[in-house]
Image 1 (tube, rainbow, N blue to C red):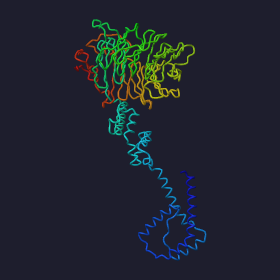
Image 2: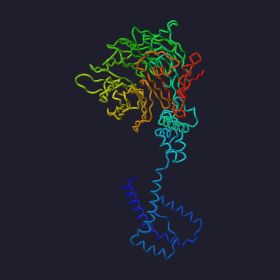
Image 3: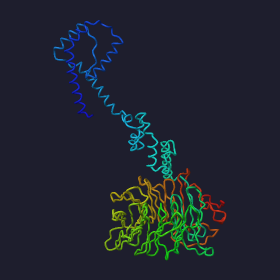
Image 4: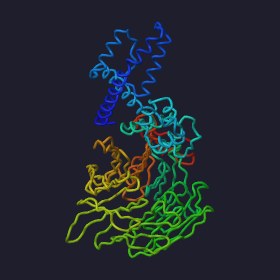
Length: 599
């Protein structure tokens, strides 16, 4: 209760006590005469007990003080004379005030009593506690034993693990103490973050293909796919630390092995691997069944862009003025689900995630942006004459793309964010002199987006305020790839530099430099995949005595693992863990600086 209510309660209580005491004093002479006829009993244990009972009874009846001790005849006569005069409130009020203060303290203490754990069922108490975070659950566990049992319930800590992204594929019956599991996950997360900041871990250079130049790289959940000028396609699984990469075979004839076209694009998800070739062929492999393609699709012209859904077996390709969506069923048969015709050659193509039965894609062709729905025809999402699109990324509900401003009225280069459901522009972000070369909307935290620009800066955009939250001068020749999470940014530049930033502190943590531009960056909480792809896809004859010359022109793929407790710059580089059928002259460990074979 507040101070005003407390004072009002105290005043009313004391007035009632004073009236009750005056009434008892007026009745006291009659009671004294009746007690005079009774024999006097020495005060003992029984009388003391009756005094406690009288105190309790008096409190129930509204009495303000405990019954007084037995008085002598002279004291009773003196009390009778005082009863005819106005009552003095000093002694009585003092005792009553003590009881009032004690009662008020008891009422205040009742606010901290966990009353609902007795009156409410246990299930309802769990439903109340599920809205608390880990710190609030820890405080509640210190209130009482009952609250401790509720606050440490397995359901609550299992939900906390799921909410913070720990052990998402586990069920509640997999572990007996989810609070301990949660603590271990938090400790591991802290260790990984510390290793990221200090560049503490292992770095490996994935095995190259002799006499070939790297053309394109893609990765998904630690699985890396690469295509080369020799027509070879290789896949690595960095999650198992087994870097012996198998080849994905194509269906070219053996006598045509030397004439295989270059690999234009590669994509991979959890079940499929896709490669597009310069001659317009598209191979699709099932990673669960083997290294031979399950479906082969031929286009009439060169493939300008491909896209692969992260979760579904849906592939989209753009060739000439046609965009085709393919679906691969469980039996491995591919079928065309939708086909669209556009007005210009497609530059960028992405599949919208989590679209359900009917796939949706977004394609850019010059200054046109198309929304492609499987059950509908191609629809123009954005078009401004003379303002070509320079980059593209999509999420489940939005699409973001960079626009280059040209013409007499220069408005600055911007990033436009559209709603896929309403098909209208939500935000116009940035006002840069350089072209936006990359944008990452899908992997960014909620209400944030990161972009890279040719003006050498990395920007974080706040989608709620349409303003730039942070701008970093990151690279010397422009930004070519970028990704962010809840505390860090990893960016790659045209000069071959990979930089890691703690954007909360506006501080660069570390950087790694290679010769070729960075074309691919993908990371999670414990690993990082980077790829440096050369500008020129010119095959240079590899000389066994001049291995460094070939390495300088072929491109690089690095895999960083931060769950390993060692310094990254001191770890060996198992770049050529090859099988026995490869040439021994290409097996080198750059950290040890001498050749070796690992068969």
